[in-house]
Amino acid sequence: MQIINCEKSKYMILSSENKRKEVLIMARVTKSTMIGELLQIDADVAPILLNIGMHCLGCPSSQMETIEEAAMVHGIDADDLVEEINTFLDSQA
Image (cartoon, rainbow, N blue to C red; front, side, top):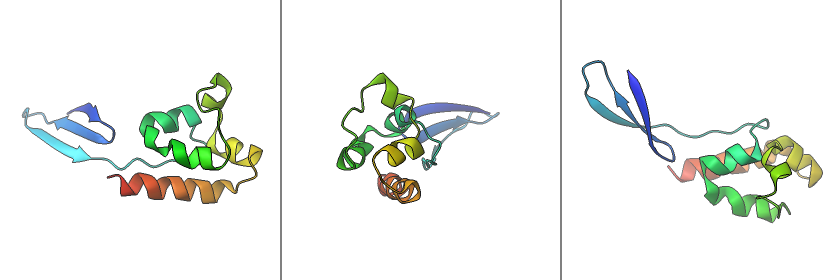
C-alpha cells in the first residue's frame, strides 16, 4: 500500500491491486504541535493565533514554538486553544 498526499488532509491510497481510493484524514493537533507544523496543516488557522496576540507567525522562533508555549507566552489556556484549533480543523473537512 502506498499513501500519496493530495492536498491539506486528503490522501490517495494505492492498494496492492493498484486500486486508487481517496480518503479524508482529519488533522488533529496537540499542545506539543509546533506552530510551523500547525500552519502547514492549515494556514487558515492563522487568524486564531493572531487573535491571541501572536502576530509574528513568520518569525523563525515562533515556527519552532509549540502551541503550549505560545499559549503560555500569551496568557491563554493551552487546552482551550488546542480545542479551538481542532474544532476549526474539523469544520474545514
